Length: 120
Image (cartoon, rainbow, N blue to C red):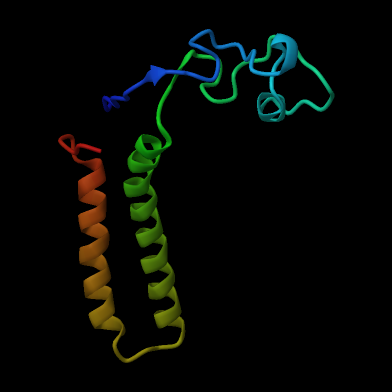
């Protein structure tokens, strides 16, 4: 199992309670009501939409940084597989060269993500 470390910071929206009281008269704000998929005028005691009710949140940039590498790898793998399939269908004369390149690229991506020492 991989250890994923996250830097959690105190949520200023709910003041670390996990319950939104940012609306008028201590009720929950419209953004948190929308996040909880509720429609109506006024709700009290909804889970904070910023931190998910934890009282601590992870900045958006950190979440994006943790997701870009795996999504890029998935995108590259599927794109290369599509190229291989299309080149095979149209019987491109450069198919063997591309297949050698694609095999090396896919092997490198697979080795990086499935070896025991990779740091994400």
